[in-house]
Length: 373
Image (cartoon, rainbow, N blue to C red; front, side, top):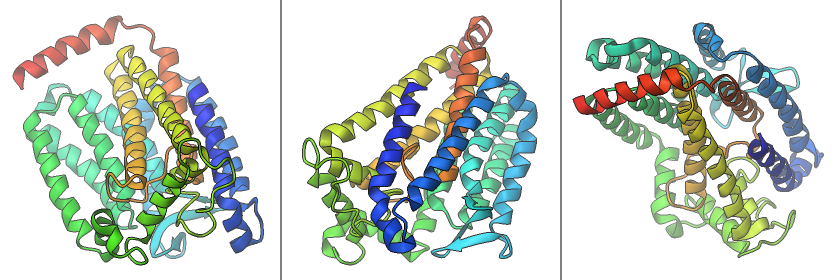
């Protein structure tokens, strides 16, 4: 809770610092973005409290209903009369003064549903027809709905997260290999099937060749990140947020943090994620049942993959994908979903102190599964 609280505070400060110029320029209100992020933060705290209070095992029976609601939301955004379209993508639904992105909630709901499904499979998971095929159909349907919005970044996170769950649950390595190979080939087709996706690959490989064109985004992120030096320019002193860096308050916020807090501040933020993941791993080791353990793995994978891909894109160690930085980037739906997920982790921690069942059962099954592999 302390680590998440620190990340939220840093996020609110970073969102305000990186967005007040944009808010003034586009909406005539320097507080436009921070006001909305603050509202979502309060809603996120409420969601954390709610998900923390009841026994997490109830989520197993609720997971089909939750999945149905998410599927309904993913379909609704594609309907012209309901969904909101921005920059050629239909990903949002307007709920009063707030805008909701169902694909962000799909991450948590799919983790819960797949965890319940995998925990109920038993030995059937080893079979291609009763394990691999149903898994691909379930995940493929959700991923397809997200992809046609289009939102490849969220699709990548969904597939990586549930793929990790599939592996941890004990799926055969040949099934994992098929999943990886198929995902890689499909990813290549999607990347080179759209100009804006292939442009991101170009900016990763050869941004310097077109610094005012396809490489502009990557170059400006690096300028911002490098301008901070060791200790940064100071809170609010970023120059790149003044309409140089696209998405300075969303997926590019880490570059602004690096500019204002420097290398030390950037490493500090990354360290907080490290502590969060370490505590999550300890929780996983203490889980009382497979369902709870898989949920923990899924949430940790979700946070870890988003953090690595976001910071990797900003530091140019991998292509940009437009994925937000967990708990910090501007985005209400993403923050609310992450806070609900944190509540689930705290719930499992609260009800998961009895290690006698899962440790004995899972260790025996793990040894047998690895022996079979």
